[in-house]
Length: 158
Image 1 (spheres, rainbow, N blue to C red):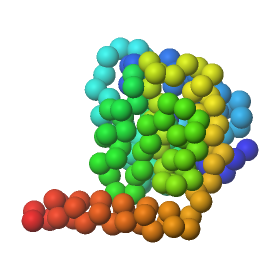
Image 2: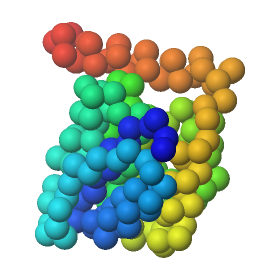
Image 3: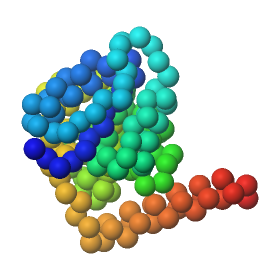
Image 4: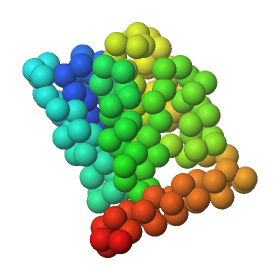
């Protein structure tokens, strides 16, 4: 069993694929928590993206997986928060590079974009790829510094 803590969420458009990925990761003995949705009824995806982000920020989950119709909406919401680097991936190469070069901690997938087999491959690659560090460490640090600076200015009323 991996020592990763993984949290997964979807909206109604990603509900089916979320279940498949959850079961896939359970079979591989990952520790995974599902924060919704629990049905295919229409919901507002930002609510569930935020639930996942909170698990990463406050409960120190290692990785998150967000699934919606395209992966785009979930990525937009998640990337609003300092320390979050959400990558919308529709192939395993993008998943690999998002980990190696960007130290992505949230994987976003579109159920309407990728098939079940490709989605499993994307998840496998994302979770098995390490951050390369080196020159990429400074770039990730700059991303986080910019996010924190503007969050502080916004929250500080400047």
